[in-house]
Image (tube, rainbow, N blue to C red; front, side, top):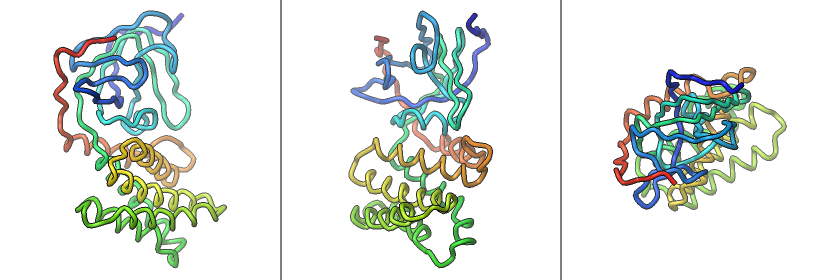
Length: 246
């Protein structure tokens, strides 16, 4: 017997804004805020149903879209609660809020993740300044993208990656891993390549979480709190009324 809920649960998902419509990356469903969508059949994650995650961080791990949506979901449910990024699939879902999520938002997340754990790095490896220099450069890019070149960001990321590839120390791997991802996220953002930006940012955020709470898994409260605050700065998406489900 499949779980059925009648009181809607709240979650988050990332979608793609394409040709004036907000669409799911998998399944090609077109969404409007407030309109319920329904799918028939047995609901199972990664197979059938409308998906979401309880937090923004886990949602970003699955789809790095350019629209962040808050959703309500109900009906038949299939859950996948294990691992760092829990998610669930539902037979019925609607968007309650939808916001533009830009490459700059992803870069800012990667920078925050690195800054969050940098003190741990400096405590154990004060002589290695690469992560701090990466953070300084990425923050400079965020303040004024024209003040930093793509070559500078690539070089900073490569310097961090070389340390990452050459260490067997797991905490060090996480921190320098965040550093190269933050630098390369900014580099891709500068050149308009959105997909890798979101992937690097999600990975950096998860690495920061492992560094902060290494035995708990998932996204740390600090990361999720930053994401929730970021939502308050985002521009709402004007979802066209003519969008239809396919």
